[in-house]
Structures are given as structure tokens and as C-alpha cells.
Length: 398
Image (cartoon, rainbow, N blue to C red; front, side, top):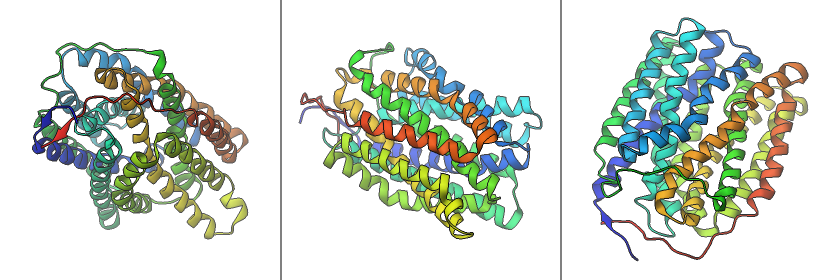
């Protein structure tokens, strides 16, 4: 094996940063839809329209990362992202009394969130050996799930004993974001990187871009409308949503490292294609569970689909490991991931608006039938994945 060796302390700091950010994500994911429904009285169409500004930072991330990469390495960029996340959380908790401040706070939080999406994979890959990329990212994913357990547990306890105190939820989110930023600042990863790195677009990465677009469609439909089925149609309270996310996170602590190993064992093509098949199953459950099963069995099945979908999100690391294996230059990874995020958001920004309109005009089932058709198309696209035999230099932890 060829490559430089990095201190084990960097891996520990990255684990702790990932765990702490997991708590931030857990707090946001388990409360946001209830917050919008309870406090701001959003309908499904309102919720769909909100995704346009919420995902705008993701669409712009290619340009944002282009500016940041000229001046900062990935660990410092991650710390900047946590400042934005904390500011957005405080805005939601204490300032968002009207729509304007609500949208602005969500945009600021979302910008921090999307910057992290662009740098967390490359940071993990800097601490991975060739053939062990899935294992390393799976370990970090397990740490994130452990942090998510902390976040949703706090939400559940507070909601159970004191009610839905959203200002407290988001104050905690801001505190965890600051802690995460401190951990990122302790990293020494990337000291050897050149001070100026440009964004790139290469035709040989086009399959990665296509898979990124598919992930954007999947993410938006299920993060927005999967949970909206439970919150809006079945009046599931925030404490139950937090409990479901807690269960998914507990499973993820074990499943994410295991799924990382599976990626290394069988390859990205099989893993990503299987993900699309399972996604189709989840779509059909959301669309037809209440029509085929009486209460409360339909709701139990929907709970299962919600948890399964969250667990399956762990497989998104297969996109990152695939890119690492096909990258002609390791310096291409962060810029290409950033462009992939922009591409997935070019689709995802408009899809929720269309989905919300379809929900209100024709019924929620048609939203998930549309998602199922996308999953079928994604299955055939993922079957085209091929990994070249040219190895890159590796990084190992001493």
C-alpha cells in the first residue's frame, strides 16, 4: 500500500464531529414537519413550495464550494457550515414568527447542512484505505446514527414531559452545531492540500451525476411527503415521529457499518441497484397501505416503511465510494460531490412543488407512484456502474 499516514486522533475527532452533527440532524428531522404543521399551519402544497427555498442552497453549492475551496480546506469549511446551522436553528426557535423569517432561517440552516454534505464524504475518504472506503464511511455513518439517537431522545423526553417546545428543540440543535464546529476545527486533515483548488466537470463522471439526480428525487419525496403522510393524514404527534427516528437510528448504529462492509464486499453496482428495488417497495407501501389494510395495521406498516427508508439512506455513501474509485485525481472528489449536489437539487427544488400539487389535486398515492417509477428507472441506471482497475494512493491511520 502506498500513501501517507495520519494520526489516529484525526479519526477520533472526525467521529466525534459526526456524532455531534447526528444529534443536530436528529433534532431537525424529527421536529420540522410537526413544527410547520402545528406552528405555521402548513398544508401539503405549502410544504411542497417551501422546498424550493430550502433546497436553493443545495442548487448553489457548486458555486459556494468553488469560492470556499479557494481559501479553506474541508475541515475549516465544515466549521463554517456549523456556524450557519446554529444561526438557522436559533432563527427557527426564537425569531420565525412570520413566513419571511421562517424561510430565511430555513435557508441559512440548509446552507450549512448542504456544505456538510459536500465535505463529510471527502473527509472520511482521507482516512480510508483502498478497498475499505465503505467500511470507513459506514463507521462514520454509525457514529452519526448514535448522535441522532441522542438528538431524538432529547426531543422525545422534552415533548413527553413538557410538550412541543420548539424553541428548546432548536436551541439544543444550535448548541450541538457549535460543539460539532469545535471538533471540526481540531482536525489536521488536508494540511498538505494546495491552497487553491478549482471546481471541475468531467464527462467520465456523468453516471455519478445521474445517480446524484436520482438521489435528489428520492430524498425530497420521502423526507417531505413520506413523513407528511404520517403527520398530516394520520395525525402522528412529534413524540411518535421522534420515537420512529430513534428506532431507525438505533438500527443504523449497527446497520451503517455493516452496509459499509457490504459495499466493499459486493460493490456499488449491486448495492445501489438493490436500494432502488427496496425503494420501490417503500413507495408501494406508502401508496396503498391504508387502502389495503384496516387501522391500526396500515399505520404500523407505514411506520415500518418510514423506518426502512431512513435506514436505506445509509446506502448513499455508495455514491461517494464509487466516485473515489473512478476519480482520475483525488482532488476531483470534493468539487465533483459539490456538483452532484447541485445537480440533484436542480431536480429536487421543483419536484416537491409538483408533488404537492399532485397530492392536493389527485391524491397522495400518485406522488408515491411517481416515485416508484423513478425507482424503476434508477434500477437500470445503477446497473450500468463499472469500477476501473486503476488504484489510487491510499491514506492509512497509524
